[in-house]
Length: 171
Image 1 (cartoon, rainbow, N blue to C red):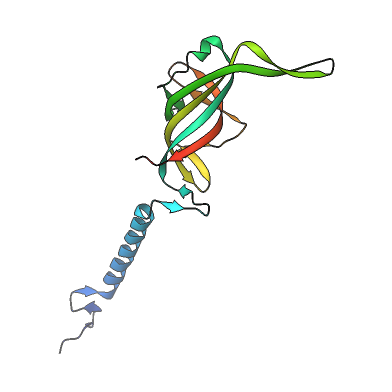
Image 2: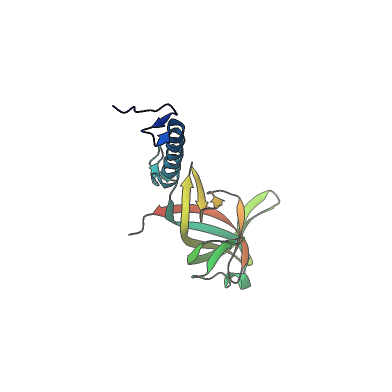
């Protein structure tokens, strides 16, 4: 009858126990890496929002106090950038007169400012929702807020405030 482990610590006289332990360790590390990088891509948070996956998004930006000549430089179909990152395509543009709050002799009122506009644009792109944060184009953090962010299109540079996000699944 043949011994399972010989006097040199080899299994069946072919490989050592230490070799098998190292091989098993390598397999566990590789399996862990595969699970971490290729695991479930769609995870739902407590509120049912899909997290950690690219999704199609439409978001609304508001640009205030735009002059007449600049109004025509923000066009439907233009790509929109934050720095070098493409954050989507402008799919609609609306404008309305820009109003400011004025006060005089204790009276306060809103009045239109001549040759100034508020532009509302809707942008279509992709975003990742990760731990409650929205990363447009996977890298640019955005939120609905009163803070402005600098954007660039083919013909215009402007600062806009994000007003709304609408996530949807492509059909």
